[in-house]
Amino acid sequence: MGWLISQAWTSHVPVGGYRHFQVIAQGGRGQTRWVELSAILDHAYREKLSWKELKDRRYWSSGWQQIPTEEEDMSSSP
Image 1 (cartoon, rainbow, N blue to C red):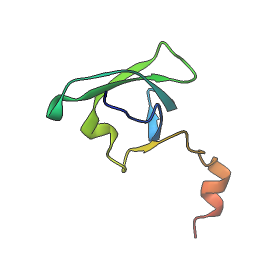
Image 2 (image 1 turned 45 degrees about the vertical axis):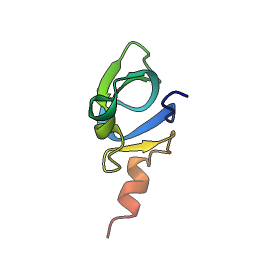
Image 3 (image 1 turned 60 degrees about the vertical axis):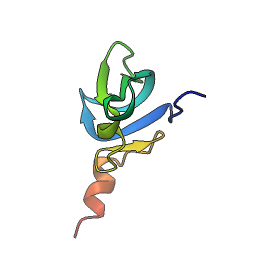
């Protein structure tokens, strides 16, 4: 059986101006595992990351998460 990972990812900060991505390729083994992502709004925009980078929850979340609008961000600050 192959290496199974989530096919949808959300960046916590814009990457190339985009936040929602899908997996288009993956490879490597062990410490050299990598994932190539394509932006949902521009399939030509691609990012290749190590699996270690992608699973860092400070920067990425599995699935497509809702992104707060600037108004929601401002209303939640003191």
